[in-house]
Amino acid sequence: MKQDLIVILDLGSHENSALARQIRALGVYSEIHPHDIKADELRALPNVKGIILNGGENNVIDGEKIDVRPEILSLGLPVLALNHGTDCVTGEISDEALSAFLFGTCKCEKNWNMKNFVEDQVELLRRQIGDRRVLLALSGGVDSSVVAALLIRAIGKQLVCVHVNHGLLRKGEPEEVVRVFRDELGAELIYVDAVDRFLDKLAGVEDPEKKRKIIGAEFIEVFNDEAAKLSGTVDFLGQGTIYPDIVESGTKTAKAVKAHHNVGGLPEHMKFELVEPLKYLFKDEVRACGKELGLPDSMVYRQPFPGPGLGVRCLGAITRDRLEAVRESDAILREEFAKNGLEGKVWQYFTLIPDTRSVGVRNNARSFEWPVIIRAVNTIDAMTAEIEHIDWALLDHITRRILNEVKGVNRVCYDLSPKPTGTIEWE
Ligand code: XMP
Image (tube, rainbow, N blue to C red; front, side, top):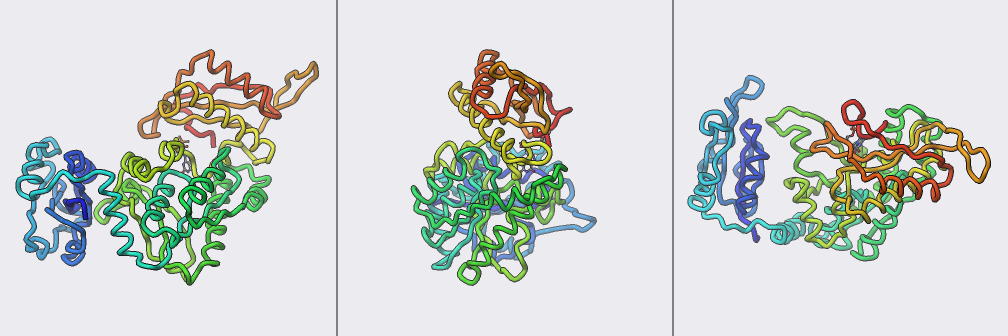
């Protein structure tokens, strides 16, 4: 093992993530574990150099006082007790005090970096999985792509990836997943063309929430069909769970904010053990891990993309021709943003098409075609958002390209609404 580890035990503090990041910023790897971890479980963690008991203003949860198991304190490891609100007046421990504990008391080395993280994870994954097989739903999003790359490095052909193309992906995405994972990284990849299956189920459905539910439920069905074919030959399910998913779903001591389901709803009889190698990483660290594993920037720095994909950007009942026009116009917008240095600078940008047409002229004749709406926003946490002030000449150029190259479109509009009042997506 390359990395030293500091274990933070969650005694009801709201500052666990901040503390983990502070320790990592000082060059030492840290993980957050529940306050009632057993001594055996703690001993099984690799290279533990010290423990921090991270308490809140009173270590009471739901009226019950919580504490660590006494045996934890007799493991012979250095222990630092923090009590936010009393010991740490500002809610934070200073870097100096923390460094004294890490490097003075625990004798840690500054060996937290992505190269070491990857090497350690590869070793841990090999130990956990042995010669058995892992199944992974590979969407092409950052998290599942990084998990796939890490598992390919660790266990190669023992990984089986399933990529479900639901017809709502952006232009070039399914092809890129196959090219990178099957052709370049040599993964065992099952590509499922489920386009008709999804679009048939969605035909005529106008309500945005119903559309979302159909897409989510159908995804699980398609994935289950594939998993069932492999059932008995696969023991593990890989998941791109990352640390914020765990925090938001509620740790043992934190109340659940939002239930995150990565691959929810697998049938009871399919018993898989979970493999979640990114579950202690924050998003920026997941990206760094992807870079370390050699994934292309187009995957590692992908802008956020909703699970229901272009399905929520082809407003109202989805039709194949309008969906194609959304996909083509979105590709033009992305290409122009990349050419003009806006990729990675603007938080999220895309096109959408409402379910309405307007009158225009084309080749001296009346046309009755759709408008394309461009949305480009900046935000910190997606709770509020401001529009990007796109250069007028660029907007003009993008408009002309869309009108010339995308079939069935006679107008381009720019959405000037901040959030609130508009959400980022239109559905
Ligand atoms: P809104 O539209 O609520 O979106 O302002 C905030 C952010 O969340 C993304 N989004 C989704 N992501 N499943 C997802 O995985 C969804 O159903 C979904 N709806 C919105 C949206 O793209 C934006 O980044």
